[in-house]
Image (cartoon, rainbow, N blue to C red):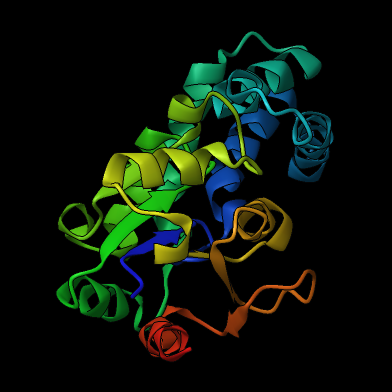
Length: 225
């Protein structure tokens, strides 16, 4: 029996349009510099490309990147200030997935444990889950972020911490995510059943679904094998 379902957050439990969260930051900086928003965004994208391959959570935090962006634009605006501007717009960037809350409630009602593993940091995750899944605190038994693992995904630490704390083995768990390399490949290498959400064609997940509404049915299918 599948006792534990481990889920990625962004674009798995809910959709996320990051451009909506970044837009107020770009507009704010464009006003200060007199540059077009597009040029500010381009400068930010260049910094994101620089840090996205780095596994250190301190470097991947938004306030760090925003601080570097400010310096790149010859401004004296703190990264934390820009981070605050982004956080105010974050809820509007979250797109609740149809049927996701109901599917999670069904799995929980069947006696399964639910856990979140994510590259999102706790303060941002609370905003996003609060918008997408009202009452999420009662659904999830554990939430693991880079602040606990000390590194970003892809990393097997996320799964091993969850399994260790909740007391389950690899064969009792399913991992669900929208990215093969970051969410599922490290889990499959441990012998955990994997479910890919969305349209990514890469990799060899055990199952593919269009959205979380299909997850309870897939788990019943897994248990029949």
